[in-house]
Structures are given as C-alpha cells and as structure tokens.
Image 1: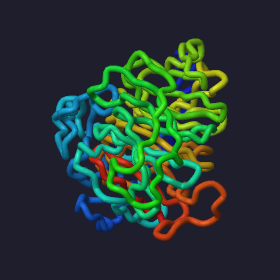
Image 2: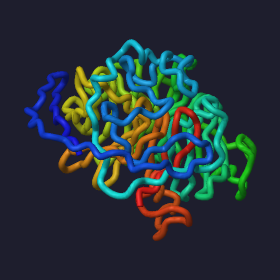
Image 3: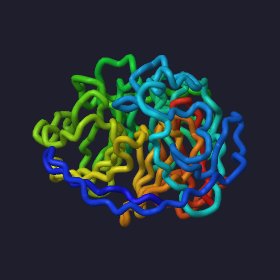
Image 4: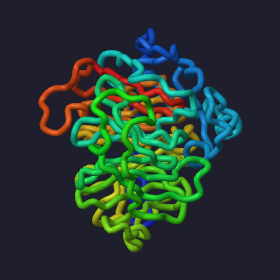
Amino acid sequence: MLPLRPVTARRGVVVVAPVVVCALTVPTSHGAAGADPLGSLVVGAATSVGAATAPIAGSVEALPSGSHGGSAAALDTGSDVGFGAAQAWDSSAGAPIGACAGPAPRVTTFGAAPPPVLGWTENMAFDDSGRLWVSKTFLNRVDAYDDDGNIIATASVRSPGGIDLGPDGRMHVAAGTGYLAQRSDVVSFDPSAGRPGEAIEAGAGAPIEVRVEARLDNRKNGLAVDAAGNRYLTSLEDDGLTKVRPDGTVDEEWSAAARLGVSNGIAISGDTAYVSQSTDRTVVHAVPLDAPGEWTTTELTAPPTMPRGLDDLAVTDEALLVTSWSSGEVYRIDRDSGEVCVLVGGIPRATSVVVADGFTGSGAESVPDGFDPGDLLVTSLHGPIRHVSLG
C-alpha cells in the first residue's frame, strides 16, 4: 500500500502535511485474466501507472485538466489522442500504486453488453428493493437490473449521470450531464412504478413518471443525497459543489462555501461528502456537510507524478472505493490509515463502483446466487458493467 498525503483546507488555504517517503515493493500482476465474454484483458489487482508491467490496451495513461477529457471524439475503444494523452504527461512520470493484499480478483461481465460507447454506463445505485439502477448517458435512460443481470424496468431521463436513493424512497438523478448537454436538472422517480415483474427489452415496459425537482444553470455530473433529502452535485465546469434543498431551491450560502474546484464523483456517508477531483493532482476531498468550507483532502498524486482520472466512488465502513476512468483501476483508500492500493485493474474507462450486497434489498440477510459478500460492480464509459469478485 502507498501512504497518502493528508491535506487540510479551510476556505481555500491548503496545507500539505509532511510525508515520510518509504520504499515500496510493487507486486506483479496475478497472471491470467478472469473470464470475460467481451475478451478485454482483465488484470487482477494490477499495479498502477509507472509499474514495470505494460498498461492495458485502451487505457489512458495521461489526461488534461478536468476529467473525461471533455472530448466526445475520444469516447471510442482506444483513442487516447482525443484525450490529449500524447501531449499532457511523460509516461515515465507515473509512480506505482501497489496491489491490495489478497487473492486475485475475478472479473466477468454482468448482464448483456450494451453497444460500445453508445451504451456508456455512467453511474448506479440500489433502491430499497434490491434493484440496481444504472444511468446510461447516451441512451437517455436509467435501467433497473435484477441480480441475474436482466433489465426489469426503465425510466427515460435526459443524459443521466449521478444517481442516488433518497430518504423519500425515490431515485434522484442528475439529468443533462453528457458532452452535448448545455445545462442540468435534478429529477426523481419512484423505482417501484412501472415494474413489469420479468425481464424486458431495454426501453420497454410501462412508463415511469419522472419529476423535475430543480432546474440548474449549467452542466453537472455527480449526485448524492443526504439523510435529510438534500441533493449535492459535482461539476466539471463549476468551481465547487451545489446543494439543492428538498424543496428544489439552491442553498447559495452552502454552495459558495464549498468552492473546492472542479469535481467529478461524490458519495455521502453520515455527515460527510467524499468528492473526487483530478486536475494536475489526484485527490479525494472529505467535505463536512455542516461546514463545507472546512474540507480535508487526501492526495493520491501530485506533479510531476501523472494524475489518475478519478471518477465516482463508494463508501464502506472500512474504506473508500474510487474508480479511475483513465487507468481503468479501482482504488481502495483505508479510512483509518489513509493507505491506498489497487483492488482491480484492466477495466477500461471505469466510471463508478458499488458493493453488490445491495441486491439483497433492505432487511435481507444473504447475498444472491453468484455473488459473495463484498463483491463489486463497476460501470464504464465503454458500456459493460463488470462484476468483480474479490474472494
């Protein structure tokens, strides 16, 4: 594991704590890729950029400021040039992040593979009944999956991005997040409405009513909901977070205090929002919901080390799980020690991660067939959803 640099920020003043540099032993790859119907290489807990092993085909090893590169032309199966990868960083500048301890993860494709790129899966969240709702940005819909990978319901949402379950039992979504969108809305829908009860063709089934909760001035990206029903949104265009109250109004004072720069993924645990950011540094901010100007920062990389393009994240009792769309990895950040390691690599353009235990729904005591406790699901800009078994 690689110790991270804790950084403390108070309303724009950043102090980097001293760092003790230690020798790092970089484990090699665990060998053969796990079974994968699409045939893409899956590397078990691969070391990160800068290790002796060659990067996987199709992963970006550099990125410009911001995340996702901002270029729709780059959203193919390996066009790193569209992301500015050839110009932005020297590939020798990367520092390795070691593999997590434990057996090699097994990675397979969950559900039917969508059309490449067009089927971009951006984000996902479980409802109270154990259905997994996945936002499909270019397809303008949010699909619900059962634990067998069947689509069992669908809601039409304009260019959906971040999604989360609210305390009202509704799924809340950032709409208007794709490259062609000019501005975003916050919308919500009842996940139990329109469910046909069996597998359906994507986009079919009884329509689900989608309600506009708030209209926003510019384009947002990630979304998370707190226990009181407030929605928090990230943006690759704004210089901070936006808080939308349950009544649909923007909390201007709170939002003005949370000016931590452009941001991508967001997840809330208790009274803290965890926010990913990738410019020339790779960091995760911890933002107190009751004091947004007093965020603290955990730094994964800083110049001249090549940044990792962090995307969405999930929070467990022990760790933060963070995806990287540029390196195709999922990182584990220990919440106590701050140490980071690579849980799994070789998932091109990874965009979000959840713990698959959510398939059990509220109150269930066992995981479904085909899953083990702690298994992960990872979405990708390429489209396929990956099932990562860590056992």
